[in-house]
Length: 275
Image (tube, rainbow, N blue to C red):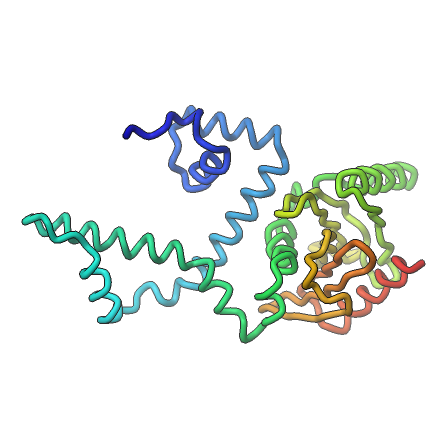
């Protein structure tokens, strides 16, 4: 059976092929144009790329290790033996190994972190908050979708009001912009992000008065039922995160700062939500 023409493929298949650099120049140009006009899809692709890079980084130390004998036996036992040409059998074996590795990568990524961060490993949206932070914080020119840093205080207030109204409408729940200046951070802006349960949002703050400012993010989303309402703290590598549920919204505060500094900001956010 002939494969479907490119234009008949599901959108996710096209985006995946674009991410893996498997398209012709014309096809890639079509997807480039689509992503420029559809920021939610562009955000999903960035998250896919972040997940892919994270898995690669985790598995890189094992790439040079020899394949265990038992695994080799499994591969060879499942490879077709109906050909007299050894290269076909070898190609099939390699194919089985690669497909198995790809299918198990996501599960392995979750298992690798269960000892260090069991709650994050179990809860999907909190993990997404960490990934989104890692994707957007390093951006220099486009760290946010809507910036609130205007030329005058009046411009800044107008942009803040626009951002809050826009995110409130898209998330279908009140979105409050938090004031963290007492903790030394100012609001940069925010962006809309895709999620399996609908749109979510990310607010970004940066340290005031620094040439290369430290950044923290606040992730807002409709929480899963299993998400604990009380404050929880997790740490993965350099990133720390406080997350909790208040009302109908889940909050995740992420940053590569100390636990005490992050806690002070989390408490300030919580008080402003209550206020």
